[in-house]
Amino acid sequence: MPLDFTKHFVAVPTEFKLRNNTGCSWKVTVKLMNGRVTLDQGWATYTAVHQIKIGYMVTFKLLTPDTLKVIIFDDDGIEVINKCGKHDKAFAAKE
Image (cartoon, rainbow, N blue to C red; front, side, top):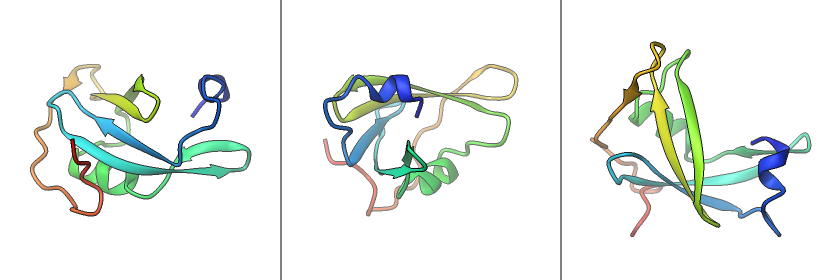
């Protein structure tokens, strides 16, 4: 995450809920690495389930202090709409 983004937090959460354009929610942990905040456990599975490929652009919008809206665009700049077909129960977020 850009450092400017993390300045909006008194304390960066240890976990975020990612919500996509179909209402699917997913938990990811947050880790400090080399002075930067990164998405950690749950992110690799999220990218696989939502079929995020190299060349895709992913945007994040802060909805609440621990919830990010995720919008995925393919390599042509078209928004990708994925219904969550299969969740890893360890990461699926409860509403």
